[in-house]
Image 1: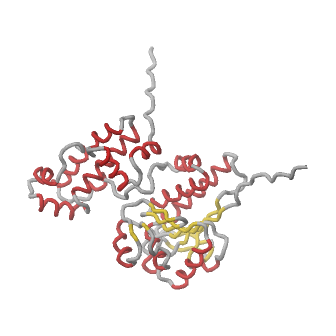
Image 2: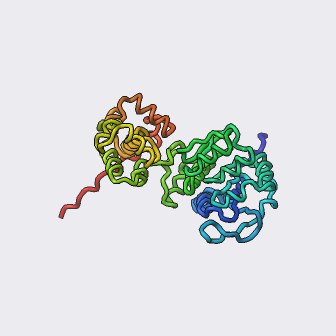
Image 3: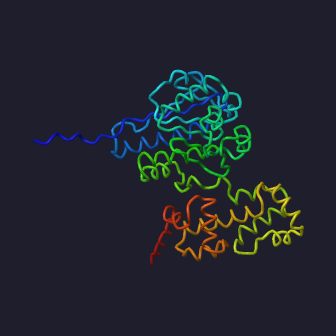
Length: 346
């Protein structure tokens, strides 16, 4: 007689906790938790599970209400000191309150203990300062809000800060960029747990894109256009966006604004926050990304239309800025154009 086979059961509910504190950024807290809660709801609504895939809660220095940086109040289910084992994923929020709380001795010791117990540990935005203070980021590749990357690198020189990433995964440890990037990270964790279909449905429900890979830059060329104060530079940036195939070398761009190349490069970098070469490369990579996502143009055509030169130079630019080569990017993110709807004849 063959032994009775044990039916396959889904894993028990995973407990997802967000460590918050007074003057935390409210979207750092609610955004990622909403992703997990929505995934749990979708799985139940579609008959994939009868119980909750995720149970979410907010932790803080004290149980009860606390004010966020916006002035709105949230409620902490428990004080962090009340929590021992049992968490699956621990997330740490950021916000202006980080400056006061990230060196709190009891909190730092608690984080170290939790790091040894939880399956995954992650920070949102400047929550990375908590993990760095606890010594959990030493020798790790990490990211945080672009405005705090320099400070994080200066205060914790043993941490390898990658300033232009949406999020960075290092095994069971993850760090994300500012605010809404925490939702991108949460979607990635849901996809890891339940597959791409579930993550995609959650993204659709929340009107998000499931297209931002973890290696994508926090900065976009379109956003950078808004950063220059001088009108000639803004006009020049708009020209670059519209003409990625043109000669966009520093001498050529300097001629368009009647400056010497050296003076132009200095002023552009000061005004925009990146060198002209980096801005041009960012523009060309974003142009190529859109073409790969939205058209069926060959890689050779995409390379030419985006001004990235040779296929090898396009490949190097993608690996550096996006983290994957162009062909792999298209396989993952290509959305064929919708077929035209035939007109009705009267």
